Length: 255
Image (cartoon, rainbow, N blue to C red):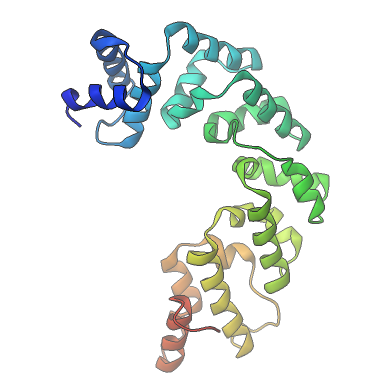
């Protein structure tokens, strides 16, 4: 986006008028940090630096350094998710305490912050109780959050819906979610339900060699191409079956 368009955009969206000098300083810093000017993240980073005073920025950095992160860590997090800088000290502390309740130690929490800064301040509910209420043990919850820190931002409804589908519809054990918590972040409509419908169709026809579904990771974690190769194209000698499975996968008919 041309520089002469960025300045009025920032003013119109933030209501802040810090002047062109401030804008040019912020723009220079964002470019030096390596942000791609063609991306929305570049605009987010520019907006954050333009709107926030040097004092406010330093106060934010200080909150994280008191928790054990370095200033360099904070700016690396900024590159990944610029808007995390808007979190209040209260929200940052709450997220830290939530991870602690999940069983993560300080080093693991700081590692989660560095890898997934978008999870900071994202939890508005007692996510630990949500998992415990579904039958997971405290040890299970600790493993889930270590493997997928973003779980802290998932709504109670999302976690319940996906967990119950995995357990009740597919007969996978709760431990399947523990071993592959990434299932909680997958789209039900675009991946989980269509693929599971294919699996159920194959099981109904006795084509999986077992009454049990395959490991959840084998069915849901793989790429689309690998899923097709594992569960659809291996039946290429039966064109009618392949057509049926493809129709199920595309959602044009139920299994």
